[in-house]
Image (cartoon, rainbow over all chains, first blue to last red; front, side, top):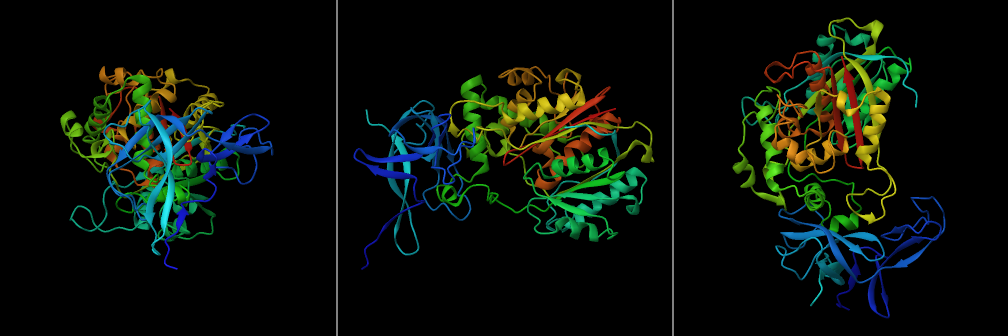
Length: 140
Length: 385
């Protein structure tokens, strides 16, 4: 007892693979469209086929857009302020909205190479660690 | 989609947009229903109509809660007419206008009213349009969503922070000439560029201010018009609630459908039988000043990346070739979410009737108002004289 648990901010955003944690989503086997997170209803919102399969996304991608939020948003977010968020484009052809971690937020820029990590978001009221996927600059 | 019979604007009403918190003499405490009913009474006077002439009411608001239109109208009088409340984010009253328009165009009613009102919550707007896990990750910040779009716009067009500041300066200059605007003092380029950063690269003076307010427009068939001078006709009223694959920069990278604003503009011009070159005055969507630039491009008034250059040349000034946000836009008028869409339409109405006073655009015959909203929603109204 007393052991703090790690709780994902939401189920089914990522999965542990032999190569480490990877974001998972859906791919339409009819038209090839990609989704993140995984679509629970199994319907492709582009072609309306019901043939979605799981897609496992690459660890590395490039910053498509980013910003630095200077003021605490209401209620939910409990991390540090300012903080950086943005979209990362993955080689599969999908853009993922994300928090950035382990980086100088002033240095963050479009086109920067980044990689996905699982990191602590905050502690909940019971003292458990709420964890989430984030991206950080790839080490040279 | 069929156009139906001709629908004209019978009258309009607009409160001053302000902070009605009772903290100062010039801003008494008012509730959303006070503001909405004040606008309704002004619209009736402007139309020369009685409340009993109105056959249906469509009320736009975001934060006023259940049956807010009913609370507003109860202030004027319950006459047994249907009251429908419309929540469509920042496009709420533009959407309410469209419902009133469609009912009159279809011949269901001869006279209908669209009303917009809002008493704004203060601080960062708590939007529930993000799933809970995304709120835990801090994504639920509207200025940040705009900032990320702005970063892409800069990347793709070479636009600079100075260009965005220039939009604020232009709109605040126009606001000086609008006694209904929340902000009636000009700002300089330097003041904008030195104001506090909210979400890089957007600063406080790139953001429209909060405001409370009410707006109302009475629509009718031509035969019911009481005040027949300088009649303003609704040439188009369109709502496009998102096109596939355009979710603030996320999702699949393959572009498969036209962008939402482009699509709604295309439909609006088609409905009006007009093109961007026929338009004399525009109320574009400037919640963030950078947004006005790409809005003008997506609406088809210039090519991609051309708006900053045209702005610098004065093209969008009051005396320019295509005056934009002549009443100061959201940037000066302020943004009571539910009241904004109709306020934009009302400014076009004033301009087409030569009633815009010191901010009057010469010979304005066709005007367009665009209310973008989270969802997304893209509401476009084209009026002509």
